[in-house]
Image (cartoon, rainbow, N blue to C red; front, side, top):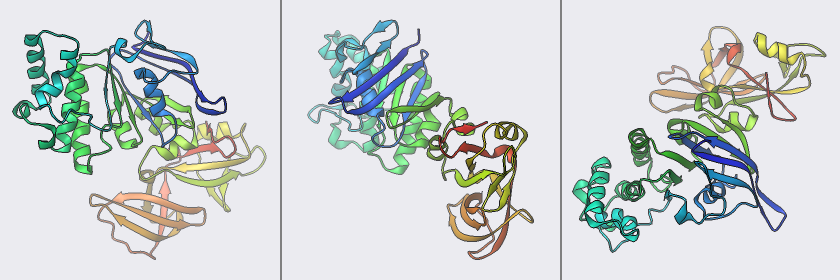
Length: 357
């Protein structure tokens, strides 16, 4: 049995509002699981059930070999870090870190040893006498993590812990959390709506939408082989280009968009022979390049970011966003040509939005 097993978990309010629709997830000891999706997809509700703050309408949750579905939080051996730091303003850093241990009547000498160990790990040793009001946002978040670490739990739960931080601090704290997991190897479940956090932190990712796990896999699997159109558009920045297309004809392996034939590779052609109908042709911006020949278009938008530039090219097949090096020598209105390797194209059924091939 894995470190965490979620089996057919459903949550319904008033017998009419279905928040979770049969979630199945299992992760191994030491894994870092990301629950990612837009607001309202059910990820925080699922985390609350893992934490014991809510109970499922049906299904079960196991931590290790224990069924904890209806156990109170205090009996689950978990530690949680919230979006808000939830620190005690009248206590200093050392007291905040040690508070949970004190409640559990851990001997004073052991508490002090734990505080020193955790403070060293999180680079808080010089701040132990300060109150939360004297700390920066990043320091307060580290104290919140320190309080969780002091517990030495079986399971860490993070509920969008970086949402209140500015962009620079989010990058720094993301690295802190990853390093922390590498040191402790404690099984972790992390909720976020930020796909960059999901890709950089997770060993495996569950992409959620409308109470359903759309895809569960490694960051590489989800990025390179998205199972649905939603996953393909949600993961990746800029988002994947989606072109409305169709099969060239009955039994035809060609894909046509607005009269333009789009390249496919051998595996896709084999699947298209059985699919047919309306399609979505997907291309990630970094897989499209400017060339001397290919699909003609006109530059309609240029967005420099420094090391790279995002550009939108209006083509007969539709507008396409490309990602190119930052030294792009072109202007809006210029005529260009686009090329790509068909092996990088993604095909989705327009009706079911499921991956073809």
